[in-house]
Every structure is written in structure tokens, then in C-alpha cells.
Image (cartoon, rainbow, N blue to C red; front, top):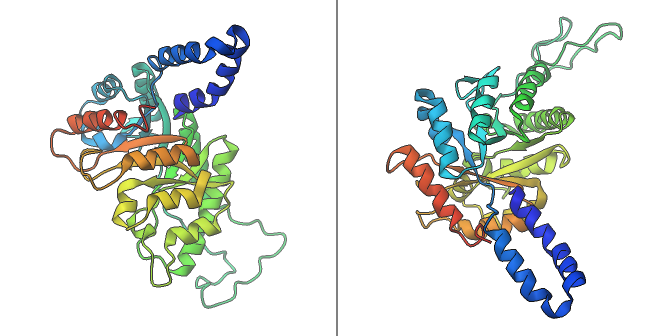
Length: 322
């Protein structure tokens, strides 16, 4: 929430200036008037997870993007990524549509499951039960297919102007070995992302957040194993609630590692009464959340109406209305 953060950080310095110019006697009244005037021109940046309008994007991409801007959204988080394309649009075309509507593409969801490198010619295929033959010193290592794929995908993310690259996929029912593979995989993606001055985030689903008999979830293991400098998190309020997670406690525990929130509800955002979105957003602002993205995945009326009403509901929350 860039404008909100900027405004909050500037309050103390503005008061100092007011006091030095007009004196303490009138500083408070004058400062209050200045704040009221400033608030009339400042809005919190709120983004839309564009797959919320997936079908509309296929039918009328330009009209849909313009509608989103007219609703009052300022940021987009795009998805449905395939190499060179997102939301069924070329990277250049999607960026052009967003720029034309005055929207910034802040992030992209890219879901690429880990690909195990092919075994070397002198290495047994079954490395789980056999010790790999050591590669001769003069033999070049095979390139990592994951790194090669992500280099190109991150180039696309840069071309879109993204600050964040998020992955919301892991294999279902992963073994301990697979979880360890994904810890290393996320660290690799995070390093490649940081090299391009972007932030990599992992978006856990209900399955990754649910705790097992040992009171540890897959997310707990990912959070403990991944490098905090390379891997941040996007927490989805619906997925976390479904998993029985105390989101406020999670924000406390993970702090600034939760860079993004998916404000996602049971239908139109803010109308189910099942998720205390106001407290979550307020807590997130204090713990270091940088942006919020609204997501709608269950529709009780035409999707555009659900997305617009969701924004209105969130904008009316005390945590967002300052």
C-alpha cells in the first residue's frame, strides 16, 4: 500500500515543519487542516488478482482492464502465465493495456512445478536407492532446466514492470524429500528474482497451511527452511481460514516475510462475516505487508459486479479509510 505507507511515514516530519513555521500554538489546528486536505487526495493502493475476471479477459481484454481502472483499482496482479504470455495476452500487449488504463502490474503468479534434472550418462537413474557416480572433473554439469525456464519467465515479469513474482503451487501430498526439494527450488527462484530487483513470494494453499499430527505444516517447514532474504510470502485470507490458521498470529510470527495479502473471502469480499478482514489488514500494515490484492473466486452475481462491490467493501474498512 504505497501511498498509505508514504503518508504515514511523512506525518511526523510534516508536524515538525508546521511547528517550526507557525509555532506550537497554532501547529495542531493547522496540521489537522493540512491532513484533512491531504486525505481528500490520497487513496490506498488496492490491487486486483486478475484471474478473478479470467473469463472476461478472454472475451474482452481491453474493456475488462478499463472497467477495473474505472472501479478504482490501481494495481493488478496477473496470472495464467505461459512463456511469453499472461492472461492469454502477449507480455507486451498486456503491459500496453494496463498502461493505457493507468494501472500498474505489481505482480504475476507463475506456477512451474519443480523438474528434476535428467541423470548424467554415468549416473544411475534411481538415485534414491543408489549412490550417484561422481562426475569427472573435466565433464561439464548439465544445465539446470528449472533455472533456464525461470530466467526467461523472470524476463517476462520484468517486462511487465512487476515488483513481485508469486508461486502458488506444490505437488499434492508431498513427501519429506519433495518438501526439501521445494525448499531448495524456492531459494533458487528467490535468488534469480532478487537479481532482477524483484521479490519472490510463496502463496501457500489450504493443504500447505494445515498442520499435521506433529503440529507442523508444510508451510512451517518451507518458512523455516527457505532463506528469508530470498523467499517471502503471500497469505490468502480464505485459504488460511479454511486451514484453521489464526492469521493475526501468523502475521505476528512471520513479520515482514509476509509481503503480500490476498484479501479473499467466501464470495464477495467483506460480506461473508467469516473473516475479520479489517483486523487482518490493520495488523498487516503494522507487520510489514507491502500490498494487498483482492481476489474473488465465488460469484453470486456477474463477476464484474462482485469485483467492484468487493473493492467498495474493502475501501470502507477503517483500516483502509485511515
